[in-house]
Length: 411
Image (cartoon, rainbow, N blue to C red; front, side, top):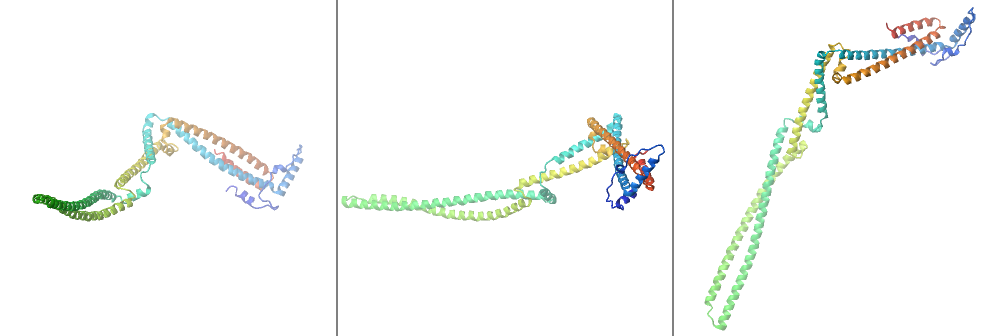
């Protein structure tokens, strides 16, 4: 480095134990009047040189000033580079505004394509996710099996509904036969009561006829025959009806048992199908086939959206590269700056706003450079004033200051 010499001197403590601080040399100077012979001036210079050699503050102060000049020069160099960049950006804007409409047309067309693709991509990013990341990953992993699973789940659910209907029907049949059996038993009870009552009435009628014959000496043979005939007729009807009820009860038992047997078989099928349906629903975290179908449709839409997003990105890269190439043909300073923000090319108000912003920035950078140069010149003057009494080192410092001056004031 240019100032390694000063840095080494600064790191080493002086004989009087200096710890890195410094005191301005001019604070120790005294004003001296000079006569025509110059004797007093030379005497004052010898006294000042002796003071510098004695306390070493002048050398420390020079080193500190030189390091500060270096830092300011580096900052000035960075500011000058940014200033050149902003100036080049402004030149690009002026070059663009000077182009003819024929030269601008293909570039603007490419910029419009980029703007449309940007809007499409923003819309795709804005769309809400219909599936969670877990669901999408599962669908993607089992994409080939999902259609078959949807079809199988729909079939099982339809079969499950049919089994439920059969179970309900068999349950109804069982209840119906049970009720019919109960009615037949109640009817048998009523028929037995009728038979007992008929027997009692016939016995009373025979007893009454015997009493009438005994006391009134009537011929009761015909009336006995009539009573016997009526009792026999009614008894036969009751007996036949009772036998029919017995047969109906047996039939109810058979049919009810058959219904129970079929219901048990159907229940077994229901359990198997229900387990299959529950497994599929649990596997895909859905409640039914409609939800699984909806999820699969959302997955297909998401896949298409991903493909569209990828295609949009590919198109965006293609048109951005094309726009960059078109702008590079104009020999712009930074074609990529305008290629990645095509809205500036399409909207003159935005272009004017950017131009105004660059102009303000350049003015601020120019002011900063002027301030830095003023500060550097002031510190250089102070260094030169302090190195007048340092002997050999003063020439080295002057050479270093000359090199710094050449860097800060390039031709």
